[in-house]
Length: 117
Image (cartoon, rainbow, N blue to C red; front, side, top):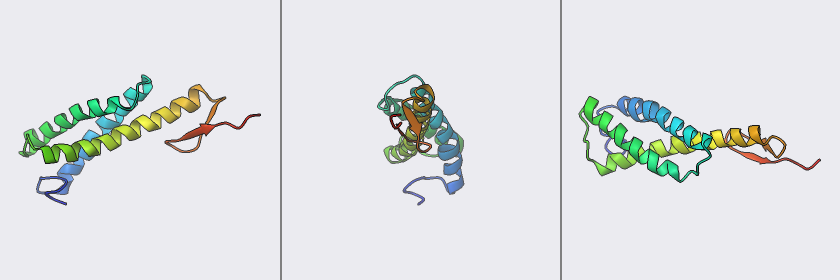
């Protein structure tokens, strides 16, 4: 996995910065986009910026390569998964809370139309 997904000497740095710190920020980004009723397409723009920030943290703290397209894309894809999951989770909560007479929750990320009475 080293060299493909991360360039640090240990996976723990990747898990700390990209998955834990970046994943939390990406989840909150998805939450913010969902709460304001914006489409998930906006997640691409915001997550691309967040990917640059995470790449800079790797560079500044752990002497990783700053301008590496390969690792930027790897970090950004992980962040995009977190941001879309955060968007979908919060959108499902919104739809079933605000329109409870129309929709019921079927899972943490899904909802369905209620049966007619």
